[in-house]
Length: 101
Image (cartoon, rainbow, N blue to C red):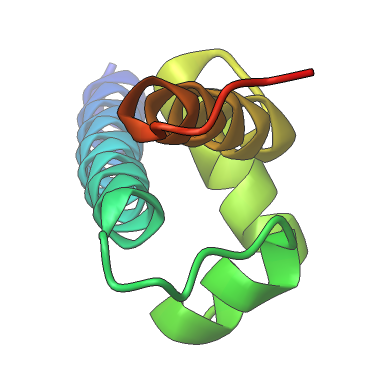
């Protein structure tokens, strides 16, 4: 009986540690996603379509960035880069006074 209580207590502590670590990981992933989106949406002219560009800016590996973005948003990094690129191109066309052929 004594071993059972000790085992249950240790199991409960391990479970709490796993939940705590998972919550910390989720917060980290969400912060990375926010930082990625901030870098992506900056209007400073340094727009890049390469995942490695943003990974370098955030000081992490491209694969880690890809996993974090997919975990936080459900979509891959390339989706966000391509969507932002498309929106920027559309905005440039709207603002342009030149007619298209």
